[in-house]
Image 1 (tube, rainbow, N blue to C red):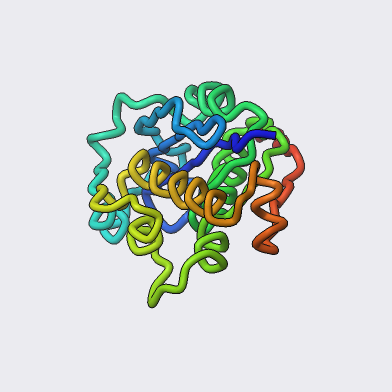
Image 2 (image 1 turned 90 degrees about the vertical axis):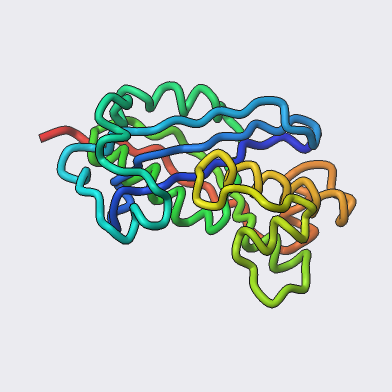
Length: 195
């Protein structure tokens, strides 16, 4: 099997994982980036308060998302881009929680995505003082990107996995996970009935 996956990164408006305000997506086929996409998201109602701390990190403010598609309006686009790929993210538990919580807040049926954490991959591949995304991405040869810009972060995650697969002679994400003794997590589909 070829090295195929989709890297994903979310930015949130506040401390709630349901407050997605931006997403970046990078499709990798046979170890090469073949498509990228990213857009702003109007967070679900009730989760749309922008906290100063988050704004300071990513620079997205409420007026930036006023005309952006809502979570429900952009959900199909996100799922279509990801398809049945394993999703790769740096600290994947956070990004998978965003998928779950934003979908839960809006009643969307979440497909049974699988995920691989590029943070865990980096820890098994490189010897670094820090495994923060900019440091791990630099070790993978991807330097000087706009950290906390969702598409740039997704591209950095993709590069970590591509480089790690090359270093471990792994042909696909499953072989990479096995070689590094990390887990590809499976998450069940979930639907929430709207009140």
